[in-house]
Structures are given as C-alpha cells and as structure tokens.
Image 1 (tube, rainbow, N blue to C red):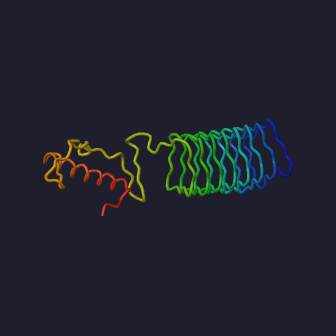
Image 2 (image 1 turned 135 degrees about the vertical axis):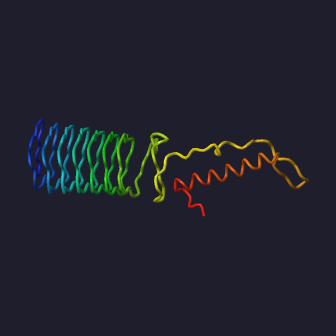
Image 3 (image 1 turned 135 degrees about the horizontal axis):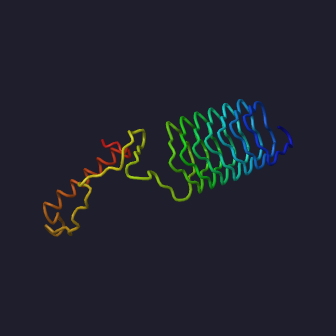
Length: 223
C-alpha cells in the first residue's frame, strides 16, 4: 500500500508483507500470524488496530502515528523506529530484540510482560506510561525524558545496579538503625561531644553501613 491508501475493518492472516507502505491510513485492523520483513513504513497512521502473533524483521518505521492499538505477543527484531508517536497503546507479551527506537514520543501506554533485549532508545519521551512485569536486557536508554511518578524496583527483591555495578537487591542490615538522637554535650565553651560512647559508636556504625550499601548499589565508588 502507498500514497493515499486507506484500509478499514480489514483482517490480514498468514500474510507475508514485503516492500513499502508509505502515507497510508490503516484503521481497525486485525493482523495475525503474519510476517512483515524488510519493509519501510513511512508517514502512516495506524489506529485502533490489533496486531497479534506477528513477526517484524528488519523494518524501518519513520514518522508514523500509532494510536489506541493493541500489540500482543509479537516478535519485533532488528527494527528502526524513528520520530514516531505512539499513544494509548497496549504492548503485552512481546519480544523486542536488537531494535533502535529514536526520538519518539510514547504516551499513555501500558507495556506489560515484555522482553526488551539489546535495544537502543535515544532521545525519546516516555510519559504517563505503565511498564509492568517486563524484562530489559542489555538495553541502552540514552537521554530519555521520563515524566510523572516513577517506581524503580517494584519490590525489595528486585536487583538494581548503577554505573555498571552488579545488580543487587535492596541492602538490609541491623546497622542501618538510627543512632540515638540525644543532644551533644558541652565539653567547654567551644567544644562539644557525644552524649555517650554508645551514641558515638552507633553513628560510626551507621555511617560505615550506609557507605557499604551505596557501594553495593554502585551509587558511589567507595574509595
């Protein structure tokens, strides 16, 4: 399809789509069990569609708008998605591998139970979206804008790492307990000290534990 092609209420099943789809409007589609390979999709509008069980390989999608669509259990491999707008979409149970996603706006989406491997996301905006139960493996997210309330690590057993450190679960230790808040005592007019030796030791223990925890997560080097 090219030019001013419009396809409404169409079901594609067991199809092989090769070549180019430019300037098309595709509305209320059901695309199932198809292979889309070595294609260029440019300046198209994809709206209210269901894309299920499809394999996308070596495709190039640029300047497209994808709106209110459901994208489920697909394999998306070695694709380049550039300057596209994806709004209010549902991406579930899909595998996205070795793809490049650049300068896109992704808004109001639900991204659930997906595997994203060896991808590059550069200069994109991810806003008011939900990413649930997904696995991101050796992915690079470069200069993204993430707005709204974000949670990093859904539970304390999720492993996180910063600056290339080995991911670790939330550090826990009895040594993280707060030190006694007893007021310092005056030794002289200009000198003050701990209220007790116990308080002094507790502060040292807490500081060293916090340092250890920050090093574990890779937030500080520790030396």
